[in-house]
Length: 423
Image 1 (cartoon, rainbow, N blue to C red):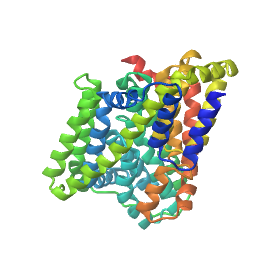
Image 2 (tube, rainbow, N blue to C red):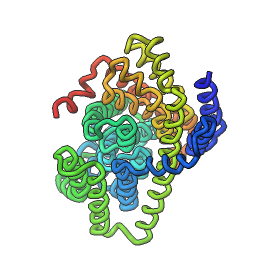
Image 3 (tube, rainbow, N blue to C red):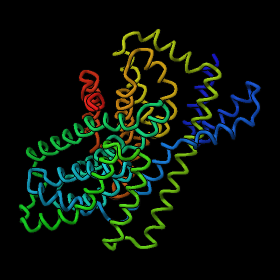
């Protein structure tokens, strides 16, 4: 009965738009007070939640991402890829997804990926006659690759909460991330082959390809350094984030695209997002500690493992819950609220927590492009000066592809686990 009351209060407060950090932290304080525990433990728990070395990677990756955004790196990536594939059927769509994939491998942020590539790709694609809903949907979906392809901020947070290896989670995200990118590209190509609502680009000259590729090389080198330093055992994800920020700053300054004003704006944007995320993390840690005292995760785990003895049915039930929650909660909230509750059941029922982390992220990716609170829908709406209905309509086919990918992951777990098991 306690579990029902607490969870009802949690979702009730979230539905009336109470800030997530206040909801989680406030409920945690009330629960601790109800148990008669001294409230001096609250600041101790809040301070302890910020002590994780791995969490330092989050503000560093955000800072690097905003520096690249202010430095106009997305334009270089898009121009280089467009010069190679722009003359294909739906070539600008292909260039858009490939640019999102590459930028995701640098930034780790969905919103930054969608905003950076969208700023460049939307005017170019609409000028060439591509249907507006298709353009907006492709950019919104392409942006979601930013939280799956490593380095991924949600995977870092999942690793901290679930106490799983972050490098292994990064390896596990590569297969599904690239699979989704290829699936998005194929959909764009096939749609363009059977549609005449766009104009093909002329094939770029070798001189143009060479000049645009040289301009994009520093950014590609940055991505290689970040990912290579992690998988080569040279640096931890946190250290690689610091290296990435310094390199991003050097690249943008050397290209004369970073002014003091732009750097200040990048730092302020990163600070705002980092503080918001850390407050939610702190509130979630406090709430998780409180509900553990009430044995709620254990009760839910016992109920779920008793009700859903078959792992397939359990995953189906979790998927349905995440799809529904994705319509109302943003990704970070879903991650920090649901993982502590579900993790014990996942382990008890015999599901690999690394696999579950990627499955979870794919489902919360889907929440980024589902109304009414899909974050990427609003980002693309703002960038493209569009109606939200246009963006949501265009995102539907990509949402279906993402859902089918989640199903495929269950029937073919090696898509996720091949790389982690190989290293």
